[in-house]
Length: 351
Image (cartoon, rainbow, N blue to C red; front, side, top):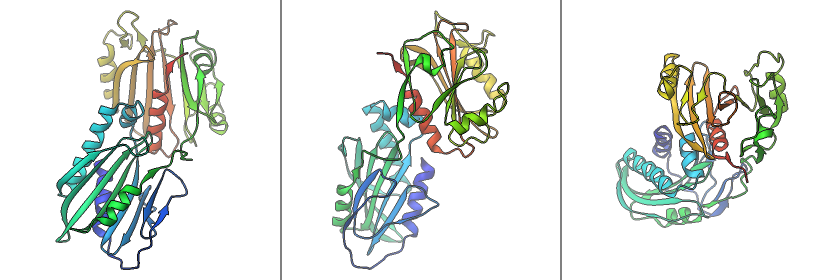
C-alpha cells in the first residue's frame, strides 16, 4: 500500500499548473467503477493502472482505484465495519505522513453504501502553502483515492470534486460468480459436505485422475492446457487461472482438535517450518473456521510465482481434509489475490 501512496504523491509533485478555462462535467471511465465531476478532461497514465489526473489552474484532481490485497478483501467483503475503518485510517495516516501534512479535520460517512473516510490537511508543495482533501472509499474490489490539492484558502473546487464522487454498482470489471454445491465442486469424488463454493461464472469443471486427482475448474482453454497429459498436470502458461479441489494426501486433520498435520506430529507449525525450508515467503497464514469447518489458508511466494492453498478439515473422508489450490495465470497481478480472496469468502454453509 505504501508503494501505491508513493506513486500518488509523486504524481502530485510532478504535475504542473494549467490555466485553461474550467468547464465542469461528469467523468466515468469506460471500464466502469465510478463517476466524478471534473473541471477538465483527465489524463490516464498507462504505467499507473487505475489512476486519472486532471488539472485546473493550480488545483490538481486525482482518482485512483487500488485493488485490494487478499487480507483487505477478507475484511471489507465480510462487512467488518471496525476492520474496514482501521484499514481506511491506516491508509489516511500513511498519506498524511508521506505528504508531511498537518491534519485539519476528518469525518466518516458512507458513499453510496460503501464505507468511506474524508480528511482535510495542510502541507507545502514546492514551497507553496497548500490545502489537500482526501476521500477514501472502500468497495469489495478497490480502495478509491479521491484526492484534490489547491493553494491554501481556495478549496471550493476540491470540495465539489470530492462531493461528486459516486460508486457505479454495475462495474463491468466484476466478473459474476456462481454458487456451486460441494459435490459439484469436487466432481463427486468426495462424500457430500454441507457447504457451497462460489466460482467464476464462466469456469467449468473437469475431473482428473482418481480420487486424489480431484476436480479442476477453469476456462476451457486453460483446462485443455492443464490436461494435455492427464497423468501430469501442467499448470504453466495459463490465461485465466485454474482452481483444483481434491482430497489432501499429505496433510490430515485431527477430528478432535481441528489441527492440521503433515503426518509427522508437528502440527501447523511444522507445516510452516517445512514451507519456509523450501524458500517460500509466507504472505498469508490464517487458521480459523470457514462455514463451520476447520480451515487453514496459506498464500506464499515461491520462485517463479505465488501459491494459494486452502485446507478444509472434518470432511470425514480419508485424511479428513481436502485441499483447494488456485493456480494463477502466467502474468500474475493483484487481481489474482482478489480472486482468491473472493473465492475464500464465498465458501458458505449449504442452505
